Amino acid sequence: MTVLPDDGLSLAADFPAATRAQWQRLAAGVLSRSGKDVPADEAEAVLSTALEDGLRARPLYTAADGAPDPGFPGFAPFVRSARATGTTDGGWDVRQRHVTADAGAILTDLENGATSLWLAAGPGGIPLDALDGALRDVYLDLAPVVLDAGAETSAAAQELLALYDRRGVAPEAVRGNLGADPLGTEARTGAAYDGDGFASTVALARLAATYPGLRALTVDALPYHEAGGSAAQELGASLATGVAYLRALTDGGLDVERALGQLEFRYAATADQFLTIAKLRAARRLWARVAEACGAPAAGAQLQHAVTSPVMMTARDPWVNMLRTTVATLAAGVGGAASVTVLPFDHALGLPDAFARRIARNTSTILVEESHLARVVDPAGGSWYVESLTDELARAAWDFFQETERAGGQARALRSGWTGERLAEVWAARSARLATRREPVTGVSEFPHLAEKPVVREPAPAAPGGGLPRVRRDEAFEALRARSDAHLAATGARPRVFLAALGPAAAHTARLSFAANLFQAGGVEPVTEGSFADSGAAEACLCSSEAVYAERAEAEAAALRAAGAGHVALAGRPGAYAGVDSYVFAGCDAVAVLSATLDRMGVS
Picture (cartoon, rainbow, N blue to C red):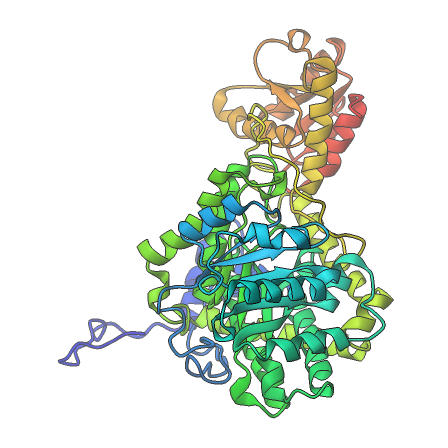
């Protein structure tokens, strides 16, 4: 927003107003100089970027790109914030996750920036009889506790509440969430909730209602995100789950306002900062619409817990995860999450060490205390791009929610396989982008470091499984690197490829670097010095310009074959060069190319 000075003089007053048509003509001119001749009115479409859910990020947004009025912070539809003050009164809640009964680690987190605890209990987490010991040094009237106990939620909740009673914590001082999420547990494990329907969940909600600061239910959308779902699918599944819980709670005797007050929503925050910001804003708008339809619009403020995405975490070059989680945390805070969990950078490797936990909690501390991100409520609000993206994403999520309801609701959609099939379709499309490196993964599919020292961690407890799959962006390339590691362990050397640089450096450097980067992504060591005979490689790849290829490619391919190369590739677009077996180029299916390369080399 432009604020005029006191005298009303605009610094742009002497300049004619620019029009969209002028911008389009200038953009078309730039495209023309780069070899793309398009009409001016098509320039925006050419420069747009396709996103999931049928959305597109356009290169230009103006006031003409209208979106619904987001309202004011703390008021329906709560797009700008669930609270009028947002998180300006101290920043967001820094919620650290623990899966083992490590009382020392828990206390260290709370003494150094964490403000609440998220405890995995029961199978795959802290044994219920160890909760007391894990929390022995914690002031339970100061640190909220959120449980994640799956099928043992009722027993874990009873244990925690008994602990509050033994410690003499007053009911009004108890804060947190008991974590009941039967549909989320079913999504994780494939096991339908018990035969009493949601009776045990309703009983927990009634019990939690006697503690003013305690909630009973969590609507966890992470299972859908971790199964490869899109942002709209994640939101739509959370709406369908939340509505199912509202129906159960009101059928169980709670009024709508009290039922709404028992729910907390958990979403993934990714390194796509604008999409994450828009997702959290859209989630609040959508839930406000549900509350309005239920007759309680004033009670529709959604309490949000954002978790940095496990899908984006990598096992190779895990240090890059610090950058990913920093951007994701920024997006979660700017998007208005009340609580944020930053997964440690070594999350994909096992149990985090003290350094990883420290970096995780300090990420929020730095963003809040040094970058002052919490000082402004909804800082992205008013951005034409963010407002448009919020609106478009909300509409796509509402469509998925309605499809889920038409499929019989969230429980039936899960059990019939409908939800899993829809998520799998999206993940298949994304996997193709990852395989072709249209969606690069730094340190894995781009700029891999074969000589990196492995980061080793103790194994984490096995997470509950049997339901929706858990995917990671690096999984296809990780499988290739694992094959290479096994070959190294068995033979003392990695599989190698000889990169034959033809012509002067100006001709071959770009494609030599491209090919080296590509082969290393699959664990194949590139050799660029000496001759093929001395390289120890079984295959070769020609690297140069099209002009040099026209003169020398066929002769060089024949020479390499004579020297013992069993396969000759060429870095560049497919051509018709005799003696060349395959081509590697930007946009090729790198996973397929590298898998075939390892197969030919006998790397199992």
